[in-house]
Length: 250
Image 1 (tube, rainbow, N blue to C red):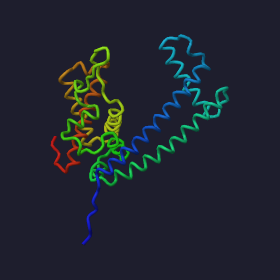
Image 2 (cartoon, one colour):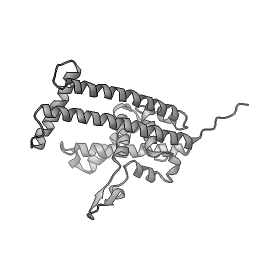
Image 3 (spheres, rainbow, N blue to C red):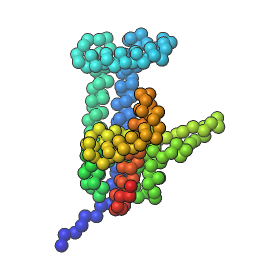
């Protein structure tokens, strides 16, 4: 009689957290290299002399174009610096790939893996990145706790008081970004008959029917974001339920 493989969920999630933190360090490093490269080139373009915000944006956009031309072989006084930074970014991409491979190998051992991968538009790196932000889902007694962790709870859940005594929102931007990317992928690739895309479209239609203002050009993005957030919360709820072996409860 074959023995069933016992999966140590806690150990896998702990390893995911470690690999995820290393991956995030690499991503931050790449972002800093990009920022420093553009900052270096902006000075060549005559920036940092008290220009307006609009002019600063224009200079940074132009610097990005110069970087691309240098990488394509154009000669420039800043070429040595730019190419050195580009090489560093490429090396960091290789390091990032190592951590992402390790993360994917870990999530393949989880019971929720096959369910997640059965949904068109979702991938294993998305699940790995999400769990690297949440840790073991058994640590969340209700799905509301998980929603709060991922930045999709009501705004009132994120109020904090500054040293000056002012109440401000303090949502977890990085974790919210991870879930947002997953939701964006679902909207684009879940297919016309996909459950989550249909859920998104139905919610957006409901919001626009309830408030016709949301159909106007300047308001359409608000309806889109609210509907996407609604869909993301449903996905997270299903993941939380699946993790516990529960039947889905919409």
